[in-house]
Length: 256
Length: 216
Ligand SMILES: Nc1ncnc2c1ncn2[C@@H]1O[C@H](COP(=O)(O)OP(=O)(O)OP(=O)(O)O)[C@@H](O)[C@H]1O
Ligand SMILES: [Mg+2]
Image (cartoon, rainbow over the protein chains, first blue to last red):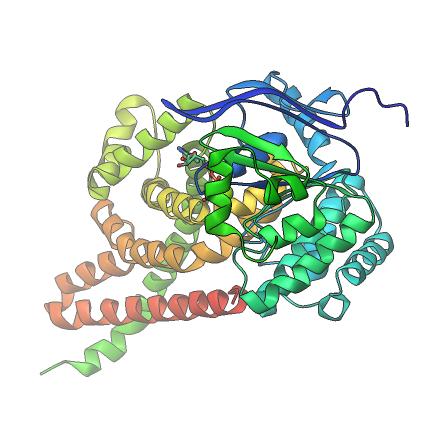
């Protein structure tokens, strides 16, 4: 691999909501295949940063680049739409509350975007749905509507839906926070599987055990800053910053 | 006592009038849905001037009596070069009026769809139009059937207003036969019953449609 440029690069990201600064000059890079966890207290800006990566919450200042291509370009409306839709095809996102399309079956949830954007045939769409749903262990629910799925199944369907676009990068915003405790593991397993397949992932999570076991790097955010970052062994066992230590004291289960 | 004989003799004329009321209702509903769709699109546009036009339309037509709107169009129209017969004026006047209510119904149903739905669609790479067309609208349509049914119910009853510009529909017919029968109770009862039948059938239809497409 000859990429001198980082896979994902965030340069001097700032974000204001009115007078409130939510992100304060954040710069970071993520290499291809890396799995990065973002942790931090509520309101520290984790979701905002994640959602800035696919320009869902546009930055006030700064740049996001994917393979050297700027994601958050300032362009006239039509050109911007075309550009951002192309970029987003490569960036999958998974939400805390699944956001499955309730009027579509599991199969249709997975195939809607590829059908619309890649013009695949019905046979190709069916094959794609089966492949992706088998991957997340949901093949037996392929013709169910989301209302008939458990939370864990919903989230696995949402992951399959994102993967069906064959993204290069996956963003997870507290993918397991809305789940009953007994359903967390099945979603974590799917994410671990993706990790083994070397999917590049940025994961906002409150689950320190999961971050410690799956991620290559941990970012600790507080009040709009990345306060500390490093490999999980360091951040979790040997944090340098007082704020990190305090946060971990409250949130660390048995990760250490 | 009620003069049933008279009612039995005269009701075929009322059936004819009911048919006019039904035609009025259907055409008004169609025009209302068209105006409502355009109005809702304007109200939800990303262009400020379109939003303003939409909001003005709604506040003008909901903020004045439908009867005045009808009179303006029918009696005032010729003064500014709009020549319509009574039926046409009735359909256009009522349709544009109910369209303002339908604008709000449709807009309400669209904004009631969780923002996460469009977001999820957009993160997959869908354009805002594709997200609206494939994700938001299908859900909003299901949601708007019942409240649109309420609008249509109001509209059917509202067609009685066009009696005032002498469209020969149910209300006008009742008034006309009072002149010859001197039996206002029977005449208004007859037209009232026919309105009830029309509204009942439409109501059942709406309920059926709503059940059929409802998501659970
Ligand atoms: N649309 C918005 N308007 C105004 N302020 C907002 C908006 N969205 C987020 N914020 C604020 O930005 C800050 C960061 O929010 P963000 O959702 O990124 O935090 P978070 O770290 O994801 O928190 P949590 O762990 O609770 O999800 C918070 O103070 C929040 O109140
Ligand atoms: Mg968050």
